Length: 223
Image 1 (cartoon, rainbow, N blue to C red):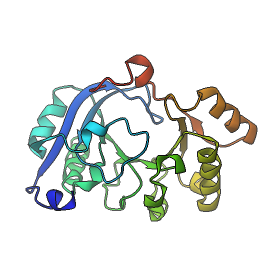
Image 2: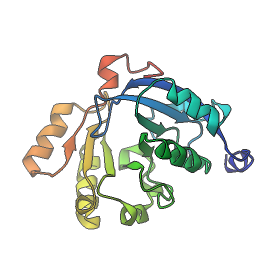
Image 3: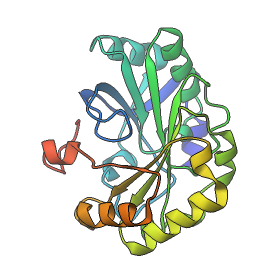
């Protein structure tokens, strides 16, 4: 996968899909948003819902992506994947979008360095819990690069995930750097269960649902 990425031409990206929908997660949930989903991912989470992005995509220039984004006349744009930071040219895209006045969210899996991302971008770092089977890939040095307007996300699939997340939040003092989101893995754990744990422990986090999976069928693409 890395060799394939190195061969991407300057100012080009491999794009899985671009679409206009409702932000389903993060503190921006519910807002209309343009999504630019890039291809490829370096992780294989047990509950992944975007497997199709692993190797499906077309080559597009940053300029062509900008044209596609502008046509929706929506100022909120999320760069997602896959794992967008696998393609270094994504930084050019995020900078150009920011220069043009777009509000940019970056959804990243926490395994790659976020320090080179334009400081105007709001980074949503999805550190992986034990049930994902990818926990060893978390790059904890990213915590030191978090800004107050970034967000850290923990996707909870079981009690072990919850207790582990609490431990990491406390040890790394993540809550002193930016807001923390917790959401249940869709269909694996009841939302009420996670809410009860958070309330019992008086945990300073924002509970979330993946609202796009309640609006549309969970398997629907392009939403």
